Length: 95
Image (cartoon, rainbow, N blue to C red; front, side):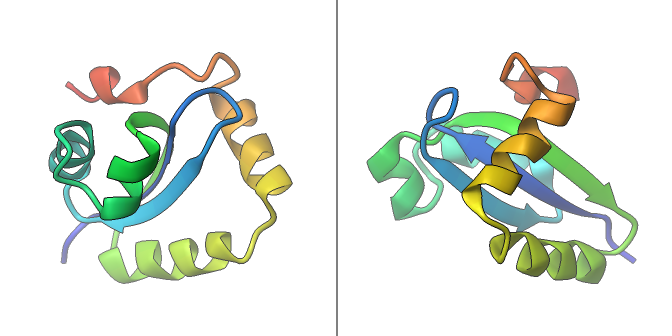
């Protein structure tokens, strides 16, 4: 069984958001930061990890991502603000 992560990246505070899912959060965020992420991430410079959740199973993370994609932008911003009110890059705390 693989762990799964749902994550939100931002270009800046209240900027462009990117919602994704992965089984390896460190590698995936590194890819985004190095420009190896999606074309959307490259185009909008969405390189700051502002929120993530860990799930015991990747299938649960995928279900959560699908659910969050239906959320309004306002709700996603509230999700970030609840746990990361300063919009710090959480990537560096993963090590």
